[in-house]
Amino acid sequence: MSTPIIQIEDLSIVLAGNDILKDVSLHVDEGEYVSIIGPNGAGKTTLVKCMAGIYRDWTGTININGQSFADHGNKALAKLQSYVPQAEGRTNPLTVEEFVTMGRYPHLSAFTTLKPEDYTAIDAAIGRAGLQSFRQRKMNTLSGGERQMAFIAAALAQGSRILLLDEPSTFLDYRHQANVASILKTACRESGITVVAVHHDINTAAASSDRIYAIKEGAIAFSGTPEEATRRETLKGIYDTEFICTPSPDRPLPFVISGGAL
Amino acid sequence: MRKPLVPLSILLLLTVGALLVCPLFGMEFIPYTATGQDREILLNLRIPRVLCAFVAGAMLSLSGMSFQALFRNPLATPFTLGVSSGAALGAAVFIRLGLAFTILGVSGTSLAAFGGAMLAVALVYGLTKIKGGFSTTTLLLAGIAISFFFSSLILFIQYVSGLTHSFRIIHWMMGTLTTADYSQLANLLPFLGGGGLLLVFLHREMNLLMVGEDIAISRGVNVGLVKKLIFLAASLMVGGVVSICGPIGFVGMMSPHICRLMVGADHRYLTPASFLFGGLFLALCDTLSRVLIAPSELPVGVLTALLGGPFFIWLLLNRKGDLEL
Image (spheres, rainbow over the protein chains, first blue to last red):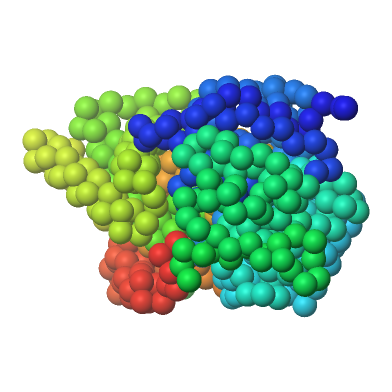
């Protein structure tokens, strides 16, 4: 087997005096779709931010594409991986097109203008996200779902081999959830892009992923296939609450419903 | 691709027109065909003054624009952040100490003002960072606190100064272009050149910072370095303007906003637009200030503040969210 494209060993980070991640080790192979699930405050977002280079004062090792994190320059790293942050309502006055164009940043220098391949990547990304009719709309006039599609389009335009996403479909309506899932699946299956996504919803995670990691209290609590992740005992161990796992009429994986809240 | 080149070209034409027409007006109308003393006034007083006003306005506007991108806040300007006061303090200290020297043709007062501006930026940035965010409240409170503190220090310096020093300090604290001449223009240009060029090359980084620091990092921006460069550029320009024209308010706030309405928020176009509009605006204001109550004249800072106050209130009432530009 080839070396994993992301290899994390003994990753620990302390934020504001709290141990957020404790000796987390995981790996992601090229072309895989890996989901990260876990309860609120478990450290999922922190883990993705460490991988994206936003937090830098961790201990341990993160190797991307066989090279240690520090050995990649900022732009070299951005060519390898792009990041879609959690939607948090913050907007900006750029148009969708301008915003997606900013995704090409690692490929540009201060002294050059956009090249044909940049325009191709921008158009393709806008097309894949279904934002053709929104090109000239300002980001701060879009709905939450449309805005999320623009963030994903900008990450796709970045043209990287790895996509890191933090809860890409949380807060979205059903149609946008389906769009996000299909864009990510297509990117992974057809373009061979490695996807690492934090998912709030277990069914979403299970339906798209090759493998799933669960984080609980800053440590890996589970790692395995979607089949293994959608078992009652596993989920109860991760979330400390009851679950109902009921067979789906048209899918191999069971549906997971929170049993505690019913 | 929609290119906001049409509004930019119109702005450029307006600017060229204004720069040609403004020198003609003043206490009396002087045509370009004038001879004798009138010609002297036109060539050696009015033209450099209009050019100074243009350059100063352009610099204030560009610094306001970069602060707004950096703090992701529409109310971040040299004035509200206390950077103008910092620059004024630097200059006041320099004048009080009775120092006078030039380095490579740049007056010591300007360099001292630049130092003061840097100090103020560092303080405001540090304060808001400790409070964990650039919310309007934190930013304005920090800016006001620093502004007041520095103003008190200036008053103190004035109080313990002799009449001559005190008069010199009061004179430009009002924000005026009365003393503008070619040597002052020459003194402003390096600050515009340094700061302006930096910002021209940082247009993509400013776009990304405006979106958010996380996004900027994940796109490969060296955020720490870029922020320092923007601070440097903005402080250079505020310091340069304040040392010569005094703290002229509100240009740095109004101009970038109006430009965003005209060419959009992409700094590729916003930077030249802010440069042109800020310059045009201050050149026109200065001309008005010479004409309105002729034969006397109004400090131009008074005029910009009269226009800026209501604009500031409009902005406060109209902003959609706390962090939106």
